[in-house]
Length: 241
Picture 1 (cartoon, rainbow, N blue to C red):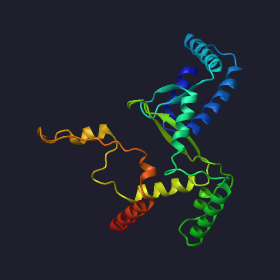
Picture 2: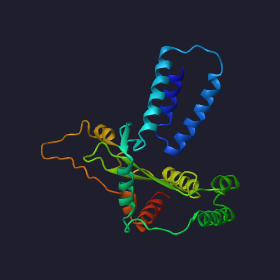
Picture 3: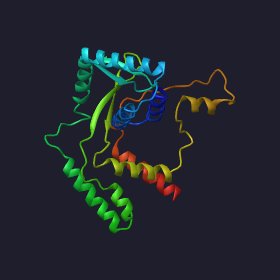
């Protein structure tokens, strides 16, 4: 029972961010503890799993120099050296062409700006009261960053992730993303992954002169000009509407 529950939970949260996963796992642990107070039989698999969990906890406690995380792709668990992880993170954030250091917490300022924007949208009837309440954050936190190792690439480089969960901008960003996704059609050249590419190419007449090229984009989101994004959305929006 315990094993199946854990398997189902891990399967369902696999695409969630780390903060959400941690919250769900903590809640699950509390529920499991309450259930353990009842007298029900445990099978052999439960005992083996419990021994493995205890051994893992002991190993992590005895080896504070390691960091256990997930891979960027492949649904794998990765163990890396904590100092190497911190060094990589420091070197990446030291890029002053992409990131700048601020001297104070801007959460309150962002909260106020989002509030004013939403008030203006509501007064112009762009959004209703229900949407306003959903998007308006009054107790947001600072976005957090972490890195995930790319085990599918040579040298296992780390990919930086900016988690804006619980930040003042997250509900608004999700709202805009969903609006754009529902309103704009996908381009003909859109390919989700290699499996979709293979499906589209299946049955097409190809000769030896045709070649497939794969371009690796480094830090795509931080290198796309904001002006280009706005112009791209605006041109497509006018085309479809």
